[in-house]
Length: 319
Image (tube, rainbow, N blue to C red; front, side, top):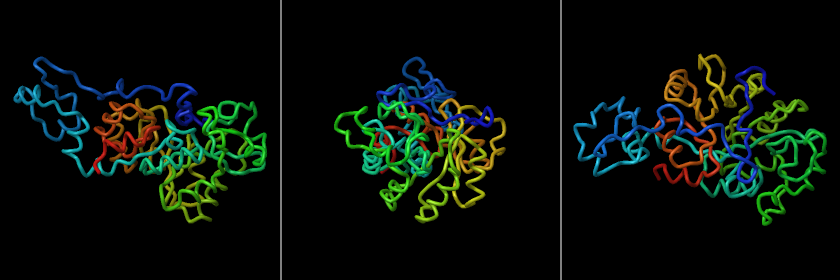
């Protein structure tokens, strides 16, 4: 799939019972949490962004710091309300902590959970149908050792892709992209990830065509780990926002002609976020499920946080 060392597959980590998510916790990333000094003093390193704006030595206020500790998210929200209000919530494969990923149940739940976006993965069947599915092989979600490009759409639609998660989802089927667009139009936006498996049939062309047909341009962005695919999307429709998925940092954030970078926590350092913003790129970070990690990236002022639990993240943001 990768065209270079930078074009690494997005979040190829299953959710819930299918394995551990993510490639490293934000708590280990640069600037995540500060240290606590004697008598309850909170050192300035705990709030790198706040201190750069308001450099007040905490040692001047030891009593305040010891008696009234303020969580990172609350301080960040009170000092930067406008920025926090613009941070958007993306439901990773739908609300995939509480419903099987990339299914209509997960998608509908993400709408209920008030996410701004739903990130979905798109591939093609043998007969070229655009379907919403993360893994190319159906073993994980359907218990069938078949690849998506080996089956026609009608064969795929017969498969149960919900029981692996919970028996109450036994009726879930692999949705097609058109079905999802019709279901969410006017309700929520989509981050459509183009998953390359080496068997695609003009994947970018077909997705852009569908977006145009349904007048869905202003309700979606398109992301991929393959930069050349994103260039094709821009060639077909320059108005579609595109995002490059990366698991490694890059030296020059302006070297790729994209609208945003979708990165793992270790890449989304304060310096990377600041440089991306200075060069007109947004930063989306994945996959953030722990409360402490959410607070960390709110403090770093990323533009979009991708999570399996959008309801939890929404609860941290101003009403």
